[in-house]
Image (tube, rainbow, N blue to C red; front, top):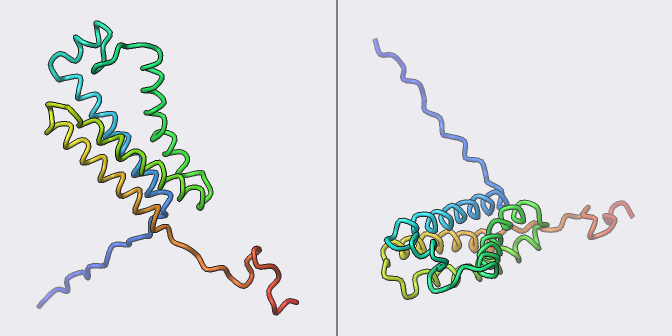
Length: 158
């Protein structure tokens, strides 16, 4: 006698809101951004340079550290803004900021001898930024309904 095998059901695949996709992407971008910087401390000579007050070619100063903080704050704030801005402002802000971040990310590879390390880091960052651009660009639109407040009172009720 054959026993009946339980039927396999499909997994539920719920639609993920664009805001959640953007927040997840900006969070992933931040992890890459920070970990590339942290792992760079393992390059020979980096800590020695920092201890004598030099980061790359720049002297460590309040201006330099404030600039670094401001640059890091942009994607950090995008996590919050992607969840809270109204849809139209959200879309525009994500398109602009992600577009500006791509050349900034690519700058980290320029003149660097550790091209595999920085190249992979930048490639991954650019992939995530491209996803952000895609999510924002393809943000679903809704057609105005007959009862939409923007369109006034429906014709039937007049």
